[in-house]
Image (cartoon, rainbow, N blue to C red; front, side, top):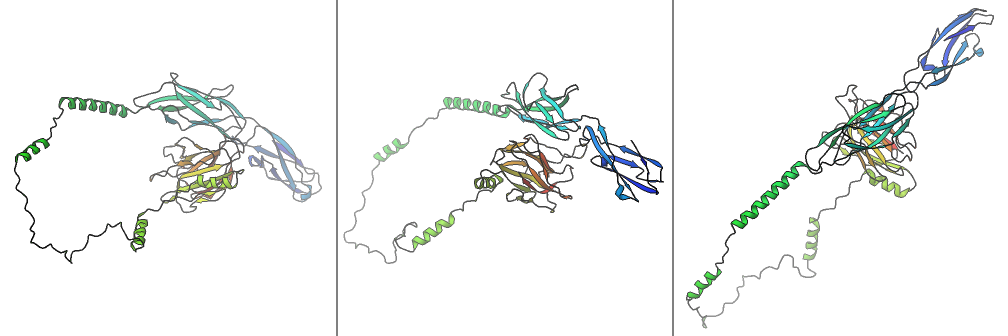
Length: 459
């Protein structure tokens, strides 16, 4: 659009133009300064380029241009206008995880991101070939603000149980349906395992066959048992033993030798009040092992806080540092990890009180990704108040954690975090949406080559 300016003064003046307001980053003024003689008119052009992101809110957006005369800065004027941004819709959906395994049910989550600039309203339904699965979807209808995401919990149940045999792959589809447009289909796989593994059936069959064979052999070749005691007694009765010699009356009785001592008393027997009591007691105590102290986890720390403050909200946590092990649990905004050491974290232990539970998942490298970003390899882990929630892995070859997603399940409060990312120092404080149980916040980085070294949490 064009802005026309007239110099109504009596001197030559230069006017500077500056777009102000929320639309300033999208605007360009050409030229940025205009020199006019008295009584003359000039024109500048304003060009607006709204980005295709949720930041460009659909509808009228006010803007203003500050015009400042160089000779008379006190005569600054600010004309105003409106730019109407047309709405656009962009939806992205992803199953977390894409493949779930189970014998009786599977619990994937569908992450729906609204990348448009208007509120998204959609319904979610499930289907598969052959009607082999049933679907319990909650919530089945979602409303998502621009730039936000929602998680839809899905429970898959097979209609028939596999009692024996190998696992079977059952592909399924979750459809995100919006009014007036084709549904967005997200495909996943449910791996149904047998109730009893195949090797157990083979083991039972072989065991039964061996038992039957053993019984048959026992019956056919029962051993004959006879006693040789009777024969020995008969031989002894038929034999004649010589008479035993009588002792001599003249031989003097042998006196006990002075060099022969009485047999020693048993080791455990000591005279009352003797020195052996203390020695025996001391020796027995040294052989007892000291009782090993129980491991202090996030749950034990948060339970102590909950006992001291029953009505408050608390969060405790600790980190597993690669090659070093678990850190001591800390709570409510304290820092855990080894910031600046270059050593990654591979697992996190979290527990809460006063929030009706928490859910979390580890975000790890994905070398095969097209955009060099990580992924959530496992299902989301949930825990009630006062219970330990673990994400990540403590194995020796466990992958580095790029970050982790977290929320509080009951909509009671919200989670805030600050994270130290390798090579990027501390990130700013970020919080999820208060009171929204489906909302979450992400702590960490996304690139495969990065990782988190330390973090702090509050609720």
